[in-house]
Amino acid sequence: MTVNATGRATGPETATGETQDVRATSGEARQTGAGLDTRAGRGAILRAARRAFTLRPYAEVTLRGVAADAGVSASLIVKHFGSKEQLFNTVADFGPAADELLAAPLDTLGRHMVLTLVRSRREQQGDPLLRAVFSLGNGDERSLLRERFHEQVTARLAALLSGGERALRAELIAGQLLGLGATLSLHPSGAGSRATPEHLADLYAPSIQHLVTG
Image (cartoon, rainbow, N blue to C red; front, side, top):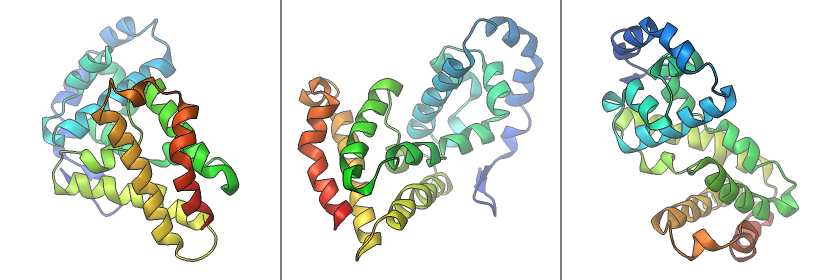
């Protein structure tokens, strides 16, 4: 797999082989997924794909493996995303997460970001940001994820801030959000898992808000 001039991951396996085999079974997929809620099915696929692309190199990820983890047919993945390449590019898109994280006025943004991150982790059963750091893909895959993270999260946050050293403050805020996600992942049954999002925000958000306001 390589990254093309538009910054998108490409690979010959996405247009042939497994994808064609999966498309050949589309009739079975329509029957299997007929009663599956579209939004729930798409969400399950994305959660499984994030796990897969974080834990394994791109070349080792298969649509059938993602489908098995998501509890759907592989043809449903093709229906929603078209190919493994397009699925990876969706996983590499931090725009929707950034939309949610930044959807608050600056004077309450720190608390909003903590609440949004914690609630997203619990509702989606996965962290919306950590794949930018912990992906086990090759250099091109990791570079794409980190470039997208910088463009869609860090740089966008910096543009919202006022005052001096906006880029530095945005990087430190992003680091604190990643640190919170990593801590909760390292202690899945720890005190953080039992704390309410509001209590975690009470403890963690003030330091982020200090960086927001400068």
